[in-house]
Image 1 (cartoon, one colour):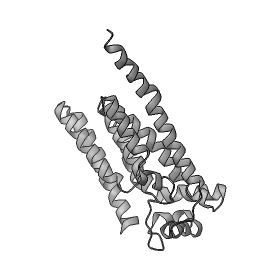
Image 2: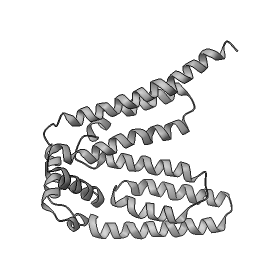
Image 3: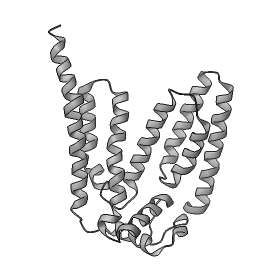
Image 4: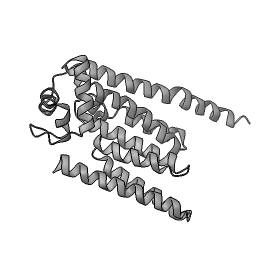
Amino acid sequence: MNSTAPQKVIHLLITRVFIPAVLIIGATARIFTWWQNRSLLIDEANLARNFCEKRWSEFFSPLSYDQFAPPLFSVTCKLVTRIFGNTEFSLRAFPLLCGLMSLLLFFHIARQLISNNWILLITVWIFSFSEMQLRYSTECKQYICDVTVALFIVAYIIWQSKHDFNARFAAILGIVIPWLSMPALFILTGAGIVFLRNAWAANDRRAIIRVSVVGALWLLNFAIYYLIVIR
C-alpha cells in the first residue's frame, strides 16, 4: 500500500500538472512567436501576393509566383485578411490556430497510444517545443495545417476503429480534407486500408462494400483535384 502511494502521486503530478503545463507553455510560445511580427520570408510574401491579388475562385487553380497551397487553405487565409487587413498578424493567424489545435490533437492521440506517463510527458514535450512546429505555427505557409489535418485523420482512425463504420461521414471527410491539405491523401490511404482490414477481419460484407465505395469516391475526388489544381 505504501509503495503504491508515491506512484499515484507521481501519476497525478504528471497527468494533472506537468503535461497541462507543457501544453500551456507550448501554446504560449506559439502565441509569443506570432506576436513578434517578424518580416515575411520570400515564400510567405509570394504566397501572400496571391491572397491579395486573386479572386476566390482562382485559388482552385494553380497559383502564381511559383507557389502552391491547397485551395481551402488559401481561401481561409484570404478571408482572415479581408476581415482583419493585409498584415503579418492576419496572414499568420490561421497557421497559428492550426498550431494550437495540433497541440491538443497530438496529446489526444498520444495519451491513447502511450501507457507510460513519463514517456507520454517526454513525447508531448518534444512536440510542444519542436523548433519546426514553433516556426511553421507562425509562418504563412500550409505546412502546420498539414500537420493538424494529419493528426485529425489519425485521431479519426482511432475513434472509428472502435465504432461501426460511418460511410457518410468518411466520404465527406475524405472529399473535403484534401482541398485543405495535400499530404492528407497519403494519410487517407492509410485510413482506407485500416477500415478495409477491420471490415475484412469482422467478415462484414456490408462494411467492406461501404468502405470500397467510400474509397472510390476518395479516388474520384483526388482525380478532380489533380486535374484542376496540381496539373
